[in-house]
Every structure is written in structure tokens, then in C-alpha cells.
Length: 228
Image 1: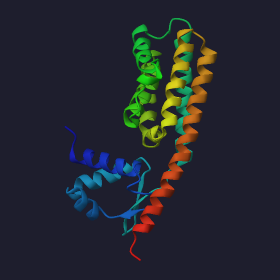
Image 2: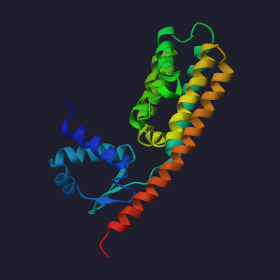
Image 3: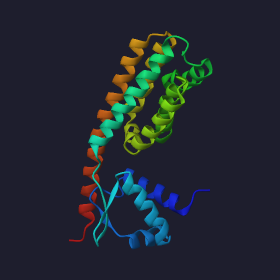
Image 4: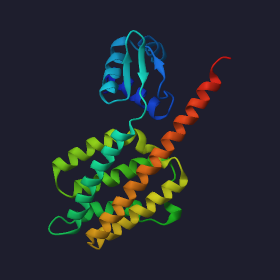
């Protein structure tokens, strides 16, 4: 069972991801204690964890502040992710490291489906997308590479999830995953790597654009809510 600090951490991180806490917002530990109905200890533990991850900062004698999204850091993580995943896909297509048939079958059952059978729920599609990329890395057979990839995946999840808030991006994800899988099935590493690289780059660009737009909208709402 998660501790109180873990629950508070998850709630605050979701509030940041949903722009209920907008970059630049200031708050105190007491305010969070009252809103979340918990004591100061789990709130403080959660805030220190979010501080280490670069989401908030402590203000001298004036509480805490939500930090702006560090796009440079996210782009570095996306670059690292691309290196890992393209390496994994190459290994799946050549030599003795070809993808496990059961994993390929499971992925095909999700992504190689008729348009009418595609899911539309953004949360579920986001989860399946993450699982797709993790499965490719796991199937490559390098446990350390998979461990590092999971860490990178966790760190970019807060903005990556925004890629599925638009129907067009969900359809594009299905189309692009299907093409990647078919090239892996044909053992064509160059084509599979190129498709995967383009897929990640497109997602990265869309996520940045959507994030900036959501921050703008959240700030507009906050300004209108302020007493005149």
C-alpha cells in the first residue's frame, strides 16, 4: 500500500501535469495540508521529491513555487530515449536477437487492428503507447538497457501523456506503430529505425507545442479567476 507521502506526491505531480498547478504558482505547505487533508510530514516529503525531479523549488521564507517546464532537459531525455529504442529495434531485426514471437504477437494484436477497432480513450492509448516502446526495448534482451529506458520513460511521462489529447495524434500513433511493427516483422532494421526515429521526433515536437498551449490557457483561466 502506498504511503501518505507517495499519495501526496502522485496527486501533486498529476496537478502539475493537468495544469491545476501552473508554472509560476506559489503555495505553502500549510495550504497543501488543508487542501489534501494530511499532515505536514507527507507534504514535505512529497515536495522534496518533486524538487529533486525539477518540478518545484523552495522559496526562502515564502513557501514553494512550481518551476517552468525545462524543455532542454526533456529534449535531452527524448534524445537518450531515441538512442536506446533505435538500438533495440536494430537488434530485434538482425542476428540472434530477433523479437520474441509472443511479444510480437501481443503488440500486433493491439496495433495492427482495423480503424474501427482502435481505442479512443487518451489515457488508455497513452498507457499502451508507453507499453509498446518498453516492450520493444525489453525484447532486445539487455536488462540494463531496459532498466535505464524505464527510468527515462518515467521522467518524460508528465508531458508525453499530452500527445494523446487530440484524436489526430491517436490515429497517427496507431499508423506509425503499425508501420514500425511491419518493418520489424520483415527484419528490415534500417527502415524500422528510420520510422521509429521519425515517430519519436514528431511526438516530441507535438508535446512541446501542446504543453506551451496548455500553459497559456491555464494562465488565462487563472488571471480571469483573480478578484478585480
